Length: 260
Image (cartoon, rainbow, N blue to C red; front, side, top):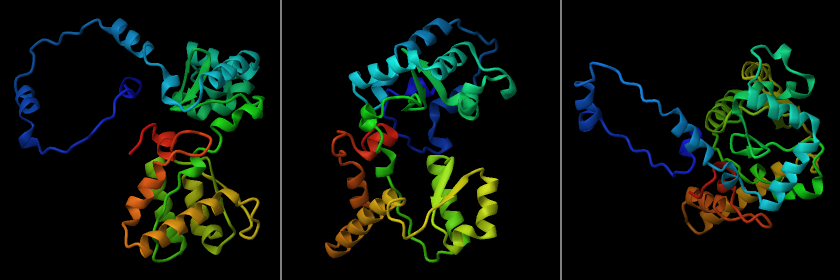
């Protein structure tokens, strides 16, 4: 279903039940006999016609390079075989090469020799890094701005839950060693949500480069919106729709495959 919907830009509108005349009518006049149409072939053909490469922001040349690397990479070949033939019921029956992909196996698809995790391309570990700059700095340019009255562990946890529910639970969370991040309450939250924490020094600019860059741009937008008396959230929306230098697409396009 998700694959079939990717080609559309959906607009969801709420309607109360009393205004849903057609569905309400049909729900009271159901078919006495259920008829199953053998349209599996048409569904498979429809899915086959969906080109996943059109929904990721990489060039044809880069896609071909990844495809060639996948053919040479043993782990990728094992993964392709599992995706095509099906995963075993137990993770203990998975080969060592593919074990790290077990927890998100249901999100993996393969088409034309390229493996996808949702709308992201899975890159071979031994892929030549000289070609990977086209799509490496993508999600780091999409950041969230949350206004907090307090910086207690409780407030941080609530903020994290909102962002995780919106974007998904991350595998790792990079923080500094502030008291709110190393508290027992925050550690319990990470354990419950199965997130691995990486602690960096707040004064080590090299290790915090991505976060520092996001903070710099966020402060700039806040100051500009306040000075010019503009709507801050519209300014953030506009920022997310600006194409990234050297990539040709915006943070929104990189994250959700469309402009907003």
